[in-house]
Length: 355
Image 1 (cartoon, helix red, strand yellow):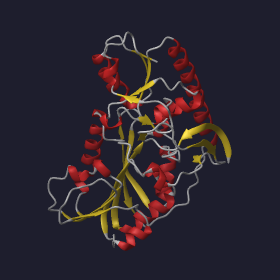
Image 2 (cartoon, one colour; image 1 turned 90 degrees about the vertical axis):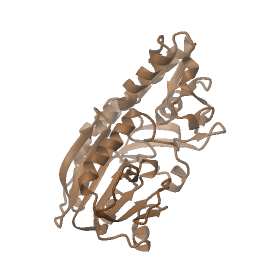
Image 3 (cartoon, helix red, strand yellow; image 1 turned 135 degrees about the vertical axis):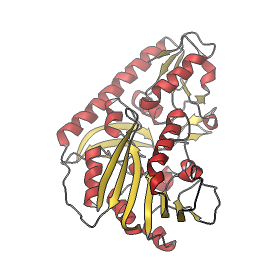
């Protein structure tokens, strides 16, 4: 593998903490000869996900995504169903009738719905869990913004294949990573999302593991790609080749982050500078640029307020703190959520400027 670039002393988690600092590691972006991009080292999932960071729960954009995904899977909600890693965003919150559903296994955390047909499993989705809870003969497997977190995508897809009936469906949503990286977004590939999945690589993985793509749906300009796939008996052995394009893509990404750090530093000299997002958006520029710890991070999640962004010495505040600040400068790189956030901040303070 060839090293594209590295972020030194990058926080390993996107959570918040009552205390400053936390575990850090060099976040190394490698590219294989065939063009596959991945992060090393892999962080143990038990360490990564010991605490939720509220992703996918805040804002109008996420709400619309979940509705769009539910409408996509709605015609397939019958017989035996597995939902993997849904948490607070489970489709169970939207299902009004269980008449056509015989069994519904929900594998993951933070779901509190109780019905006779629902089996809640607080565990990772793996071969052991499948055997222990006798999860099989399913008509549908669904997951949303989970696939990018998996450390072994081939094994994951093979386990889904085993659970499905012949002609069963596998429907899922993932980040539109290529579009996100073109915009310089840090939430595309990181410790939580250790592989870069463009649409081409996802197609190769699916076909090589016995899934036929029936439909692809795009949500937003750079937010998500949704796939409807069907289990088939035919397996392929397609090779993925995209080295030059991907190396160039990620090299430009690091160039953008370097320019962002320069802009933040210049803005800080004028004071009244803030970062938006108690998340990896802020962690990347703080780690790369050794951003001053007196710069506050704004976030709409009330559970994050007055706490530290993990691995940093920067506190998270409510956006309301800029209300009476003269011409506050805000670093914002949240992609699909930018316009929603800009409109909100301008209502709080008309003089706000964006870096």
